[in-house]
Amino acid sequence: MKKHTLITGEPFSFEAGGRLDSLTLVYHTSDRAYTPGEKVIWICHALTGNSDPEDWWPQMVGKGCLIDPAKYYVVCAGMLCSPYGSSGPSSINPATGKPWYLDFPETTVRDIVRANILVRKHLGIEHIDMMLGPSIGGFQTLEWCIMEPDIIDSAIFLATATRVSPYLTAFNESQRMALLADPTFKAAESLEGGRDGLACARTIALISYRTYDGYNATQWEEDPDTLFADRAGSYQRYQGLKLVRRFDAYSYWYLTRSLDSQNVGRGRGGVEAALSRIKARCAVISIDSDVLFPPKHGKETVAALKWASYYEISSIYGHDGFLIEHDQLTAILAPLMP
Image 1 (cartoon, rainbow, N blue to C red):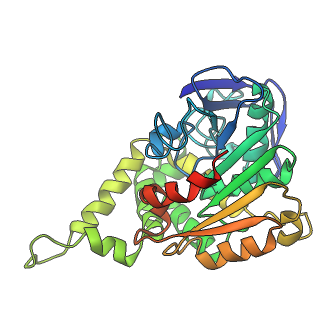
Image 2 (cartoon, helix red, strand yellow; image 1 turned 120 degrees about the vertical axis):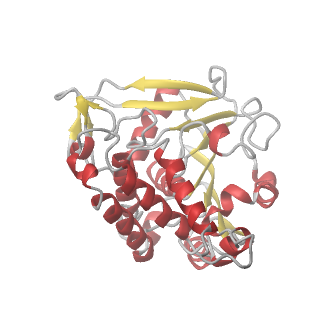
Image 3 (cartoon, helix red, strand yellow; image 1 turned 30 degrees about the horizontal axis):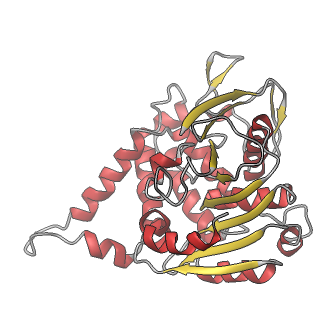
């Protein structure tokens, strides 16, 4: 897929207050110009993903995969506040010549979707045959189906929810507390700030993404006589360092706050009233071991939608099952493809 950058050149106001004179938006598309009338699949990426789904979802997106950019016109726009080029706390504040850090406007899921709509309009796309997104990508997909009900033909809500739960917010706040415990984060003197806090925050998140059975399947000590168990601890440290090498703490702070903004019913008369605006054919996919977005919520979402089908993936890997259970996901999506 091909990377593009759009500079809007027009003011953008944020839902929680604040305004930018212009946005920079990074996005990927199939490696050709869009031809009106061809089938479009729009992917909304997850929390620490980027606008190149072939990078973070290679078993699902790519040549010969179910979502083949040669067969469909595939688009994925980078989220606001992500550190991969779109406007956010790590981008440059023109007033200071330095990164925004914690002075960037607080950003909601609705802001992210409104920015993505600017990309859609720039590309001249008036009809999206299928939109799908996992986790916060599912938040975006839900919001977008409500904002532009006549644009989207079918939608896949994967491991996601109509409203952030107190349980998810608690995990998000614990991660932000880890960032705040790192004095270099609060100093905001460099994008290297908060690295130790970010590593810790990532390990907190990872526990919420996985399960007891998932850890036990992979992290037992090789030596049964080990004095102090450390294999799982080493894995946590590795995963924290892995994120630090590609992400910054300020973007992570803002994105976890975006998660906490999710409520499709806000200002729309409640969740059910908001969902009633959706015209797309919908499918909700839950993961049986997902503690962040349990099947119970997925089934409730289906019950509130006018036209929706429900599917469930079986996995010992919890929320991260959408990145691991490719065969099950492919079997579910294949009959739904445009």
